[in-house]
Length: 438
Image (cartoon, rainbow, N blue to C red; front, top):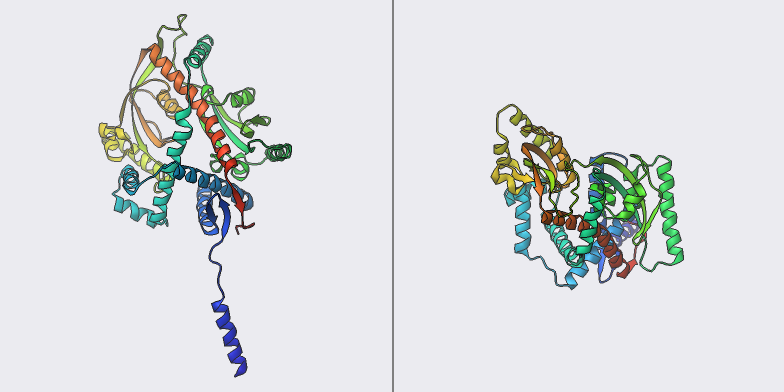
């Protein structure tokens, strides 16, 4: 009887003992990252990486990368709030309404789809709100401060006219960035360089670049394999262009040091930009003959609701209907395209070289007039492309200067964004409270 009473008392004390339901992993200035939110984010990323296929990075390294990314995000959101950047519910509702509309869903249907995929709608709203706030902060702190002088444009145009008709090159480069703190000590520099050297050693031993990027890179593109996408050389940091100049496809460059840290660069591809220019004019003010293309497209965007597999399946179905003359391209664009051009049957009008992203332009230039492409991937999603007409036209001096200004600005933007993020991270007070996120 006494033994039974003793056991009952022990059980009661165990039940009354406080249970740890969450813990603070990191203090970031006046905010915290909890174990619960970290593990939820980790699960989401692991599921996405598994869907993409390929080997998963070691879990401990993936955790380190994710925690660092969350620290930088917290610092951005705090800076946005300090500067009075707000996203009210009406603005958020409009943004979510646009996402739902792009997926051809009403907001209630969209919410139901999210919940069917296991996503809590309130958390989705918070994520979209945070993304908008961080984007507005970057626009204010980085984008709007980038200046391109007339002298830079003059030099750019002179350099391109001096190439004597050389065809522009596009590069697909992936990077692993080992960020170095501002005013780093000699010991910090040595430690970061050693980490970059370890990455090189693993790559030389056959390591997977995308896997190592997810495990080591401090770049914003780390969890997508570090791929910067196809860009012309003038839209890349000059350091990257110089470092990969003599590489063959698939080769890795020696470590590159910049103001932001150490870069490990891999050349994923090199190709000729598909621009049909006439010979450069002897007079820099004279117009340059270029190819114009009248083109239409159907865009299916990839997002939290529509996966890459869903987008490809939808576009293949649409293409089959068009090829079988069961529907017209214009009708399918009006029904399914996630683009403002949908109301015009997908018509983008006449476009010049450089008006569209390189992936789109490359596929467009390879198409015969009147033929529909296979699904083409771009940063915006997946496209079906239809070329309607082509012609040669002259580009005015003003348009040349606008294109040059944009190219210079894009090159500066990449470097300026990384530099700003590094400074923001370095200024943040960061205190680690729990060693393990298991």
